[in-house]
Length: 149
Image (cartoon, rainbow, N blue to C red; front, side, top):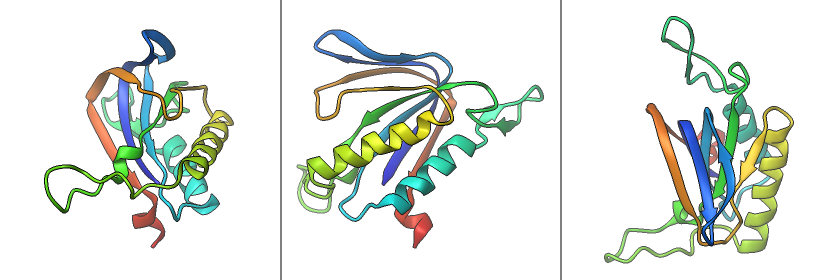
């Protein structure tokens, strides 16, 4: 899995001019599922996301997790994270998992995260517009294959 984690003051996702997910302070996740991703990748991602200390404490140091601040997550599926840009100027988008597997793991990830914090979602495979106010800015790239190899 490849997940872009953004610390946000607020974020929302809109489909067909209707807001389908919205949070205030928390994390915006852009989630890409790879063809070889498994439960092991999912478990690792959940553990890292809910425990990652990227929120500022009273001294201004990044010491608090999403759980510590009682924050929320907005999770958006993002197959383009597996784009292949090696050849030419048009990215190839065949590097991600097939849609059925990607949807299943994406939904399992969101359900597992809900065990720790409230989670809002975009709509899988929809044309979405994502708005955010990045806080910091803090943006982290989590690649489970790098960590698990």
